[in-house]
Image 1 (spheres, rainbow, N blue to C red):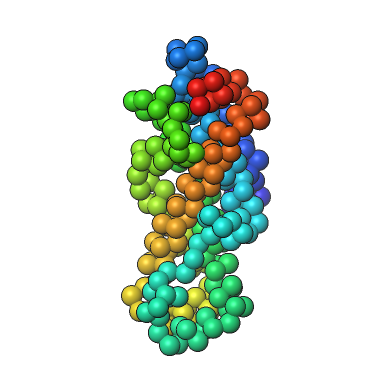
Image 2 (cartoon, one colour):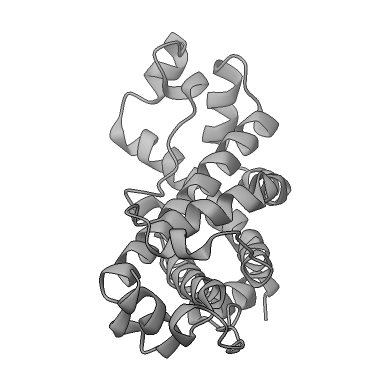
Length: 227
């Protein structure tokens, strides 16, 4: 079986992101608040990656979709590039290539997110649980991870773009200025990381809105009683 397909299947089904074991109940009201956040982030990331790694997951997601870098499709694009992107068919084809590459990078990112959640720690868990912002925990996780996702995805996405060997990419890059495959891969990686965190944050907000729907007593106890 192809290793990439196998990894993607595992992530989409949630097998790559198992729920964490129940920790000791040492928090307010008998709940370990940091553990509740970890469980909520695990479930949020599980759902987010399942959505993003579905067919056309990035492309169909308004929050996560990768767009053309400014050097290619922006106001400073050359006349040749503008001509190439004049038709929706050509533009759509290029966008799908970039978003497919983002999905390849996301496969590489999923285990890193899992590991980061397992080691996630915060000085004031209660403030995150009570935060008015629906993606407060996701943003805290992103702060702890720094540029880890981008760094990990750049090689994977760069390889995906090269393997595609689509003449359209070569033609556009030859006509563009200030960007090449390496630059394109870096840009797509940054956008993919933004999309991953946005998707996790969206799932976090949904859990906060209805913690009982998770069926997890720790999430329900912490976010239902204290949220």
